[in-house]
Length: 133
Image (cartoon, rainbow, N blue to C red; front, top):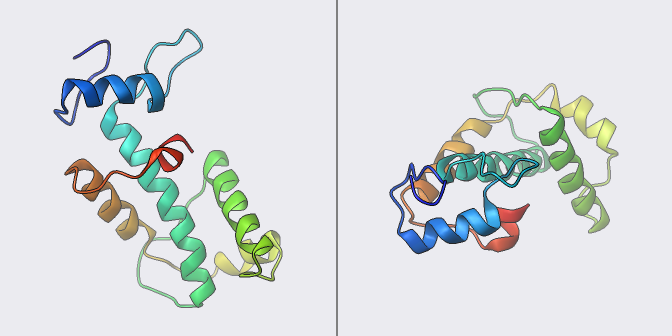
C-alpha cells in the first residue's frame, strides 16, 4: 500500500504516484477505488472489445467465447464502431452490426488476456489517451 493505492503489481513509487493522480478510478470523494492491475484489466477489456470489431470486419469466425457486453462496454463498442464508420471502414449500422455479431464467435478473451499480460509484465503500457479512455 502506497499513498492509498494498493500496489498489486509492485511498481516503482513514481509509477504508483502517476497512476494515482491521473489514471486510477476514484469515487465521488476522490478516493482511489481501483488497483493498477484493475486499471490494466479495464484497458485490456476495452481494447479487446475494439478487436471484436476488427474480427467482425474480417468476417471470420473463431472458436472461442462470445462477448458479453455491459452498458459501459456497449458504449465503448458503439463509439469505436462509429469512428470506423466515419472513416469509411464500416458501412452497416450499429444495430445491424450487433445483430450479425451475435451470430459470430470471436476469441475476445484471448486478446484481453494477452494484452493484460503484456501490461502486467510491464513489457508494454499504452500511452495516456488509451489509459484515460
